[in-house]
Amino acid sequence: MKARRRKRKSGQAGHSMALFPLCKTPTGPVRVTRIQLVLYCFLLSLILYFLYGRKAAASVKRPHPIFHALGMEEGQEMTDMMVVKEAMPQTPTDTPWGAPLVWGDTRNSAWRRAKFAQQGIRTGLLALMVGTYSQFVRRFLSSAETYFLPGQMVTYYILTDSPHSLDPPIELGPERKLKVVHVAELPGWHRLAYRRMALLADAIRDPISTEVEYIFCADIDQEFVAPVGEEILGDLVATLHPELYGMPRNTFPYEVEEDSAACVKEHEGDYYYTSELYGGLVSEMYRLARVCSLLILQDQANGVVAKGLEESYLNRYLIDHRPTCVLSPEYSWWDSALAADVPLQRLVSLGRQCESYDNQTREEHRC
Image 1: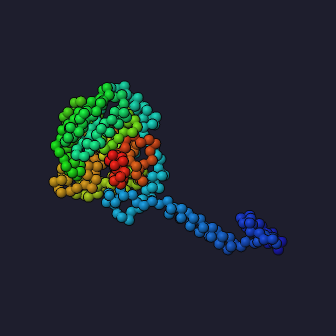
Image 2: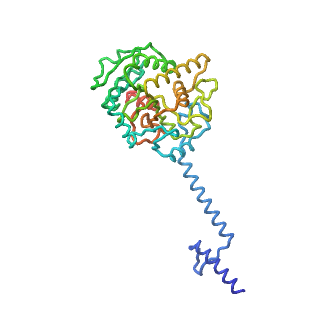
Image 3: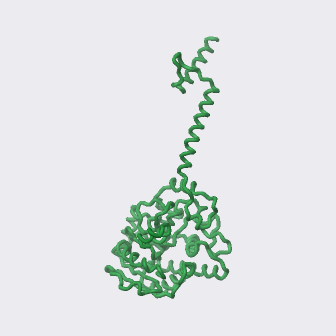
């Protein structure tokens, strides 16, 4: 019996020494009791905890100014959102409702380009140019000539209060046209945002509806920097906001004021879309512009202002009428701490980029 106990104790000591092979003295191995073993494990856990905590704290960034600009609470941090961005796959190819989520260099995009390339499609690219935005028009058009639907028939529609800004006219390639549509002067950004959808609806009704099959609306202060081909064509096309792609749903700056026609409930919404680029069939775009302009008029009559202005109404519409084609942030990008990590930038917003520059840098970049 005593021999068995001695053998059991000897075995326990052997296991302890296997766990702590360095616990030896010149006179032989040291016996480690269960209490000591628990203490060692506890100390090791504390060391790992503090080492990990320091590393995590060092990686946390300060909240980006976009959250303050969008009226989010000061105490909200972006740590969890950045983790979500890093964890989610970078190139999903479908939306939850089965529409294609377009990345330009995927096999699916190559198939879409081949499908549309031989159909002789007529497409319009519309931009509103008023006031000081005339400084961007030539860069916008020249970059579109290089990269927007190369080889296709394209008509540029420039809605402007200063047609002389396009003199002398920019040289265009074959099958490309430029049409200037005069609009009344609209001073002030807020007033322009309220009128843009109505102007788009009017332009589509006459003359666009009889001249092209697809129409895309883009902000003039942008530059095409890589090919944007037939993969973007669809019945109703929206583009993901580059700073909110991959973020949790509760960070989307949807309109939450219940009195607003743009209000989005907590259970609604899959993505947050940018107003920098959207389009589709002429009939679909006319309906979008018409409905959004009526929602804006309704809010104006009630003295309500949606915090995202035109973009709020666009997102409300796209929740009720899900896009048949969603463009990845490749098709609307600007340099930002929150901007999505995309394989290739295709359309860059100079205006939103310039907002982060100081005066000297703005001059250097001709902002």
